[in-house]
Every structure is written in C-alpha cells, then in structure tokens.
Length: 469
Image 1 (cartoon, one colour):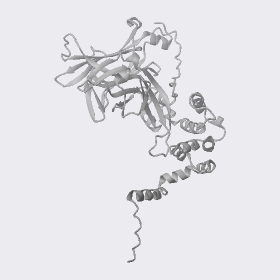
Image 2 (cartoon, rainbow, N blue to C red; image 1 turned 90 degrees about the horizontal axis):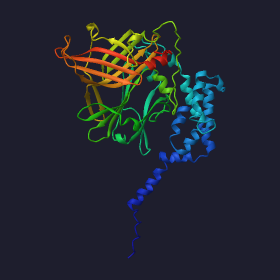
Image 3 (tube, helix red, strand yellow; image 1 turned 180 degrees about the vertical axis):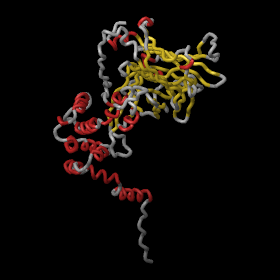
Image 4 (cartoon, rainbow, N blue to C red; image 1 turned 120 degrees about the vertical axis):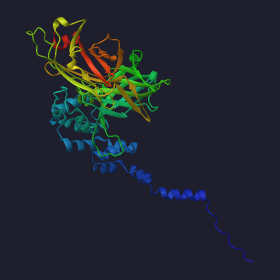
C-alpha cells in the first residue's frame, strides 16, 4: 500500500504571530521614522530647510538627532533674516537692550540653537504694542486699566519652582488664577507633588511669556523672568498662622505668599500668591531667568519752599476681596499728615475716621477666604486679601501691597454709635502699616468699616522725597 505523503508541519501560533508582526512593522509609523532618521544629514537638512519656525520647533521634539538638526543655526538664521532682516542693528533700540541684557546669561552666539533663541526672543521683543496699552491709567486706582488684557494678549503665565532640602527641584504651573481690579491671585495645588512643608528650602516665582506657535500638544517656547525668590528656612519659623478650617491651616510666609498645610499631615495642600498690578507686566516678561526686572527710578522735583513737602497730596485706593468676589473697594484723595503729627517714626494718613459716620463703609460680603485643590474645597473664616495702592502728589505709585490679611476680635469700650462686636485688620511690613476697624451690625447682618488709617515710615518718605523729617 502506497504510503501517504506527510502533511506539512503547522506553524506554531506564536511564531506565526511574530512573523506577522514583523511584516506589519515594515509599514508602521515607527519604521517610517527610523527610515527618515537613517537618511544622511545633508538630505535631512535640505528637507528641513523648507519648514517654517513652528514645524521646526515641533520636529525638534521627535528624537535626539532631529532635535540637533532642527536647532542648527543655518536653518534658524535663514528664518531670522527672512523675518527681521539681515542687519541686526536695525532692530528697535528696546529690542537691542533686551537681547544684550539676556544673551550673556542664557545663550551665546555660535552655540547650537543660538539663532532659534534669537528668533523667538526678537519676535517677543518686537511686539511692543502693550507699552502703549499700559499708558491708559485708571483715575480710580492710578494703575494701568488694561493690565489683565495685556497679560492675556502676551500669553503670560507664571511658574513656581520649588526646591527641597535634598536639592531636588520641581517646576509647576498654576492650578487656577483669579483676577481682580488691582491684582491677580495664583494657586498651585499640592496633589502629592509638592514636598512636605518642613522640607521646602526655596520658592522661586518666574513670569513666563509664551510665543504663539502652531504646535498642538506641545508646551510653547517661552522666556522666564525671575520675580521673587524666598528662602523658606528664613521664613518658616516666623510664619504667621492667619486662619484655619477643619482641613487646612494657612501660613503667611511673606507678603502675598500663603501656604495651606493639611492638618495633622504637614503636607502642602496648596501655595497661593497674590501679585499687585504695579509694573506686573514688566516684572513678568522683562527680567531674566536669574535677575528680576529693575524698576526705573522716577526723580521727584526738589522743593525747598514747601515746609511739608512729601506729607500731603496722597491718593489711596484699597480693596478687600477673596478668591471668588470683591468685598470692598474705595478710593480716597488729598490725604495728608501735619509735620507736628509724626509719631514714632510713622506718618499717619487717615482715610476713614471713626468719628465721621458719613465715611463708614458697608462691606458687600463676609470676610472669608475660599480655597480649592483637587476634589476638596473649603473656606477659612476671618481671612481675605487686601490690595493697597498709595499714590504720591504726582499720581505715581508710592507704596503698593497685595497680601492676605486676617481679622481679629477687638476689645472696645461701649460705643454710642455701634454696640456690635468690633474687629481689627492689621497689616505691617518694612514700609508701613494699615489698620482697619470693623463692626458687625447684628440687626442688618452685615459688616461695617468704621476706621481706616495708613501709616508710612518716615524713612521711606525721606528717602523718596529727599527730606529729613
């Protein structure tokens, strides 16, 4: 009997899968990319020379080799010359000054990526329309009225660099922000990323201006401007606890900086900063990564005729708000202090007098500071944010403050005007003090501001006006 031919061996399923995978791999995007990277550099450079700035920037994130090729100075010099011209000296003077100040600190001519850096830096500096928009001054606050719009149009954001005691550093973008008339409040939620409160060594705040590029999914290029650097070891022991609720405790480290710490855990729930609008745009974009923006000095006219020069003509704008809404906003003009009224090295400027009932101001909400992070939120009673802008007689900012403050019960003698519970808000720094007296009107269920005094140090006035009080 004729023996049947043996059937061909079946291919094991695992081997068949491997072979199929290899055939598919030849057509996969990864293989296409590898084929592209196997091309000689001369051919790749020829291909890249047809791309614009946005495409080059995106391609630089694909691989190490493409990053090096996409940062070649020959490519970016061509783009730079096409957009700004061959002669760099023809750029506006303000651009020259900006590039000169930062080039020695960030990128040197000739190194890989220099012309890319120069292109984006010049691109940002040439857009000077914001200077004109900041020239529109509010008659109420004495500050530019379009600060928020300018910041948004320039794609300005802020980053917080947090270093711990082991030397590790993390950089974070705000979880949320809240703008009001004269300040912006920023908050960074912990989310388990921030070090424990006792382990934080340094906080650095940078303003970052992003360049508007068509690169979806990628963080747009930008330049950092150092705005504040806080040594936590010097402030931790002197930190003031300004309030708490059932979940967090608020520690005021520095004017404008609050750290919310989870109770019984000592881990950071959030870090909250409030930035005053005075020179905020310039501070956010015109410094360097290591040096903050230096405000130009305004030389006050010398006056040897007025015996009380520097003691009168002040204008004050003050507001209380929280992270949700405004609580109170008032402006006062022609504030003064007689030379004979200077006490204990302080010049007192009275805006609201306790004796003048017509000046007493009702608040539009309660003194609370809502907070939120991740899935949790709460509100700390008797805390809020105070913004103060004091202008001199030339309508120039003389003293600007944005800081969280707390309201404390005050023991007062029996008053014939108000018999409700009295409270005191007291703020103090090296330049002066602010004292506000409030009273709770039980029948009307509202808070009334019945006294507001601003105290400026004699040293600040003497230095500012060239006097010797």
